[in-house]
Image (cartoon, rainbow, N blue to C red):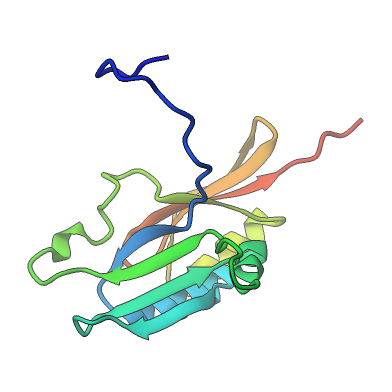
Length: 155
């Protein structure tokens, strides 16, 4: 097999998705929201050399995996990144009106209620179809997420 440039394609080493970057205006407000709405755990929080902040959050089993032993790959999570001065209009719009990510939950109704209680918004209310119930919600800044509850097949 060859690439579009004509060079042979070699097997790539396995990759692990680590973080999805979410632009925010305020680290502490965003952290409080993600903890209240989604049960986020802080995986890493330290100042950057430029005086900014490295703030990584994990969720559910991935948050536990991220605290594993030395050499273990980190769990999937998000990296809250404060937007640069002058780029504030990008916050909440970094995906062009599409969702940033999908969260799976055992109870989409309860998860949607937690987002609202934390100050987020329901973009599309809970609907059911194709083996799942789902809702679109937004964080404090308009970053949209899909909450999905998979429905078990009933015999």
